[in-house]
Length: 288
Image 1 (spheres, rainbow, N blue to C red):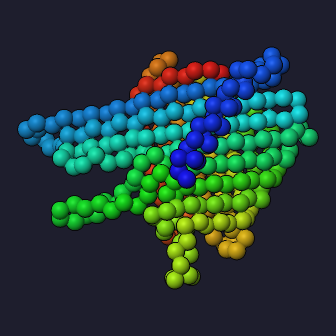
Image 2: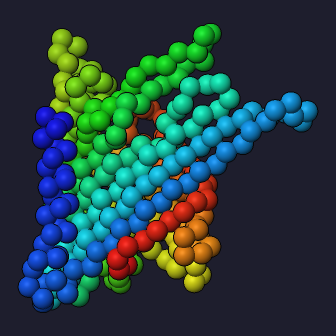
Image 3: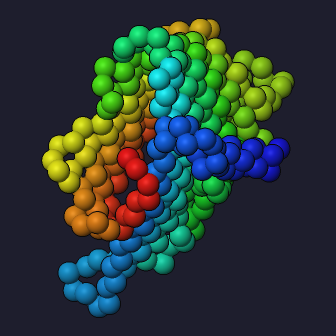
């Protein structure tokens, strides 16, 4: 199952990029493709340092690919985002600091200037096994997730409001599926103690949006959010909010600030927050 999903994702991306290369001239001109590669590294070493400190190493890399088509009657946007990072502090084992794999495709049919119907699909998961680290002696860790465990799928059908090229607000009827195999806390229904579910299916409303803003010539801010309410539990909201401030120092050197907030009552009763400040290399291929 996991191999089939991975192959399907690769085929989808390759097909999208191939279409832009081999289509007729008029169609090829409508495609805009861009890939951004990033790599960030930080390291500190202490040896008999009287003021204290602990040696550490942190590394994170990512790839963001966009393939968008714009025609008179429709717009088709595709994106693939990946992140993976590790940290090592002192004599502790290496730990993950980032792990993300997300594919998104949105098709908007243009019938009005700013308000148009759209259909979209999303898929997200992680690359490698994730652990919860317990404060015990000796330290122990418990596996809590893996590739496609959980895996998330979302299908949307609704209206897309785009007042300008940098703003998008989408309201839709949505279907959401969560799949698991070993780590069933993401899918299991606590009301059926005699059965362990590995598939969670939800139907509801979804409100999502994206906004980009150029703060300065070399400073860009982008934000995106998604709110989902299941018809069966309308009072509970699954929320996701991502923020990125990108500061371009040179053509290859950049500094980023990331702030992410996530809340899913199926996973945790508390909100989850991740904040990362990074400086490293960034290389872009293609158009914006």
